Length: 349
Image (tube, rainbow, N blue to C red; front, side):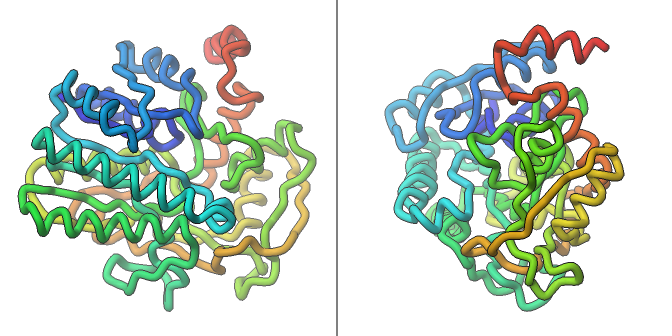
């Protein structure tokens, strides 16, 4: 029996798929490479010491997706695949609704067709919108402030309805906060297309000289230093949360939501200062206008995940900065086959 990982070549998906392999699971990856690189699969295979079945399929392609289920005995699905940039979702909402929601609907239809009813869904803290208080718990009202977050919120509601229609379903909705860091090997990490939407790859690209300065979106929030506060979590801690959730959905039915965060909020400038402290590299930055859809402050109450999943984040902000910087130094151009020999040499040293 195999675990299907949609978006398994992406930042969080690749770390989770690798952890599953290390835990003894058989893994099948589906990815359309819209925001990921095929090379990540070969690096995962190198780390895991085994081949990974890979299908370049868009989730909206029902025929292509059905082929995956025909070829493998799928036991459960960890569903990462989807567009994820808040700003882009504001400027192109229909693209986000059609891709994220449409792909999930097709996935659920194919899962139902092949009698697979166990799913771990990659949701987001954006479903909380602008929370009335922090830390935010899973039982507060849901109200996203941007189209990206609304796609996650709508999918959560769709999955609840799917369970009502068939109580064989078991679904974990993982509302995670802001992943940073990279695999400790330096072999897999975050490699966004174009200008990064997430903070840490933007910082590391400035540190490596790829970009002149960090643009800090908003310096007039009602926070101690005026910049947005978020709950940053190491990507390997986040991957472990998916493994724990998978173990739960295999043994129960129903739909449950879990925050995956540290429970501590850091501002953008807190992260910049910690990165400078850990690496010794100065990060020039410029404060510019806020991005549409962003909020001042959001961090998690992670107690439910600890209580019901047996999961708790272990790594520190310093760990996140150190591992992200190692990834960037070893891979200055991200995933690039022309750098493979240089990469292998760096890892050995």
